[in-house]
Amino acid sequence: MNILSDLFLSFARIGLFTFGGGYAMISLIENECVEKKQWITHDEMMNITVIAESTPGPIAINCATYVGYKQKGFRGALAATIGMILPSFCIIFAISMFLDHFLEIRWIAHAFQGIKIAVGILILDAAVKMLKKMPKKRMPRAFMFCAFAAMLMINLFSLRFSSIILMLSAGLTSLIIYMAEKPAAKGGAGA
Image 1 (cartoon, rainbow, N blue to C red):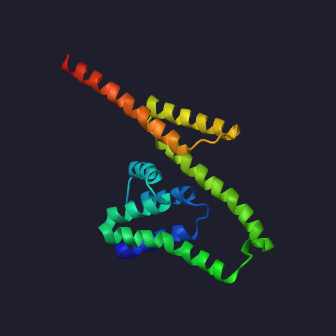
Image 2: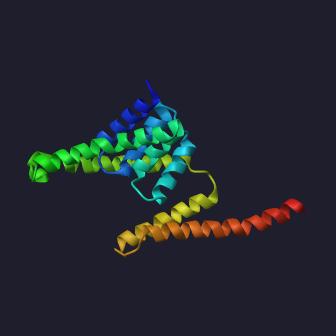
Image 3: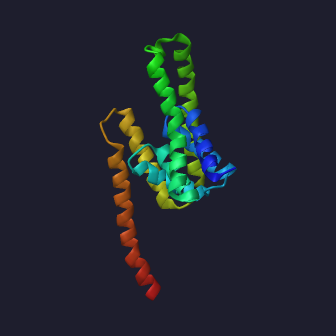
């Protein structure tokens, strides 16, 4: 199969059958792109997820764009991105055209309650996979634990706090630690 059509169809399948946004899609993207197709490695998937989270735009679309670009340049990025976007766009467009009170339909409302549970499981699955692949170093684990504890406290006490500030704080702290360790490593290498 042509790589462009393979990219398009693979991401269209993910976009068509995934509810709950980008975080729910991470597990499916990893399964398709790392395990089945081997377009990228597990480490690249981790890096893509971090970069896609910190750049503008939906995380799943950013991941699709990267994978497509890595496989076939601009045309690959375009095919993968359109594949990810098109199914959702068509479904939402059809719903908006024909069903004014879509969620008021009883069986659809019940289906969405079940879908919420599945989305939570998909997000948890992606988090567990990333946690297992995380380097077994103290610093990344400490950052993860501190960020988890901070977000838990923020949610438990209903505080207004932006996760962006938390991410920037972790990045700044990591940069400061790196800069502090860099002169020590140079001094130790010369001795």
